[in-house]
Every structure is written in structure tokens, then in C-alpha cells.
Length: 392
Image (cartoon, rainbow, N blue to C red; front, side):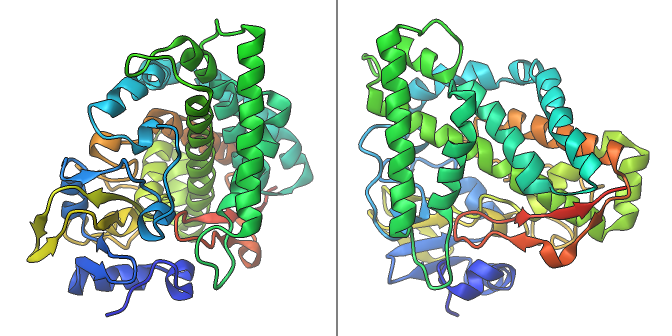
């Protein structure tokens, strides 16, 4: 079989290719990229916990497949243990279950502020008008970004990730947007350093006061951290909320169960994350030669974890292609696993639950305008980035 994550067929609809990979070539080698692709749950689960694979040469499709260089300054998502721990510990206290629970009132207030005028309009886009601005405002506050610039920076990140048919990797326009965002983040960090305002508990302040690997983080490290957190903090939740709205609409009996019992909202969001995982794939480089399912992965080669495929592996989940809010899996890869499990898991679940609770409480009979629903076209991110609904 032939599989290419940048092909139009896969970017438009990856599920048939993933099913065939799992069935026929679970450890698939692509000579063009000198990279292996793991599509089954068990293989991805084990590989993410193994120190045979390194993140320090990059983890994104562009870095692993196209051999783009990683950021010049360390960022914890691209560090191996034990180095990663030293960087991650600075932000970890803000993302514990207890710390995130303390944010619920703030998140709910924001959700209601954004939702009220949309309900009066009677029609809005769940992704663009509600989930995107909420996730952006929350992560911007956590990072320490100016509130009046947060959406502009977030929009730049979105343009950086945008793709057109036939495009492989970032376009010149996307690269220019990334540079604009990095430049402005650098200015913000510089302004904070010059002002001496480092006493807060936002991420920039914590990094400015902190120490990693025996030294103060450089401005470049802080910018790389802020960009990474802006990407991860504002991408997954909007896609997942829009996805959940779509799948509940497509399954009226399950939507009825959730509206009758709001305690099921969290389960519906979790199933949406499994069924249609927004973070499609991330990778590493083989550090030490290893054999997997009869294939020999050699040092220096790339290896991509197909998260979205693994979360639909029939060997792990009964009727894996079915959206089922009664599912209670013992294991799941929705926020990754192992050394690089997403630091923002609790925050993502909180935001998703609160947004869905508010939408379903205010408009349980919403109707999706299916003709306007659109999936993101990308090798990296999956899900609906346009989800227009009509409410009564």
C-alpha cells in the first residue's frame, strides 16, 4: 500500500488509510521521509514510554518528515528526560487537577459572556465565535499575554498551520505569520523584563524568575515556551468542542441522553476526543536501533505516532469507529501518553465540559447547518474548524 500524510486523500479523509495501515502495515516505512509510521494503539502506547525514541531533533511533521530544524532554544515538548522535567516543572503547578478546578468559575463566566449575544443572534459558529475565543483568552491569561492582542496572536498561529491542496509543509505566508507571532512574543517578553514585572504567577513571570539546567531561561526560551503553549492551549479544545457538537447532532439519542443527564457531558467530550482526535500525529527520531513487528528501525530514522489512528484501533476499542458516549476505556491516547503526555489535559477537559454544558443548557435543540460544517485541512490537526448552528 501507499500512504503519505501530505497527500490530498489522507488530509481530506485519513480514516480509510488508517484502517488499512493497522490491518496491513502497522509499522510502515516511507522511503521519501526515511520515517516509520505506527498506527496501532499498543505500538504507540509503548513507544511513547520508551527512551529508544528521542524528541530533541523535533516532534512535528515538518521537523520529522521534512527535516526542518527544531527551535534553536529548548522547549520542554522537544526535550527528553530528564531534561524535560526541569523545564516542565516550572509550569506544572498551574496545570494540576486542583489548580485547574479553581479556574472553573472564570471559564464559565467567559463562556456565558461569549454565548449570550450569540444566542440572541440565533445563529453562530461554535468553533469560530465561541470555543476559539474562549480557549484563546484562557491560555493567554495563563501565559501572561496582553488581553487585547491574544486573538491576533492566535489568528497568526492558525494561519501558520493552514494548508491548501497540494501544499506540503508551511507556505511562505504561513512562515511570515509565524515570524510575526514570534517577533511580537519577543517584544512582550522584552517589555516584561524591562519593566521588572515578574512577580505574577503567569507563565512568563514564572520563567523570568525560574531556573532550568542551572541557569535563567533566555528570552528565546521564554518565547518558544509561550508559542508552544499558545498552540496547544488554543487549538485542541475548539476543534474538540466543534466535533462533539457535530457527533451529538448526528446521534440524536446520545444527545438526548446528555441533555437529560448533564453529568454525561464529560463522557461525551472524552469520546469525541477519542473518536476524532485533533492532534493527528507527532513524532520522534530513533535513538537506538530497535525491532518492532519484524521491522528494523535504525538510529537516526524518523518515527511518527499516528494518534488518531491508534485511538480507533479495533484491537483496543470494541466497535472503534462508532461514536459511543457510554464507552469507558481503560486506556486512551487522546492527550498522548508517557514522557510527553499533554500538560494541559485537565484544562482541556474543563474547558470542553464547561462549553458543552453551557451550549446544551441554553440550546439543547440546536441544529447544525451541515452544508457549512468544514473540517480542517491539515496533516497535523484534525476536526471541524467551522461548525455553524441555529438555535431557538
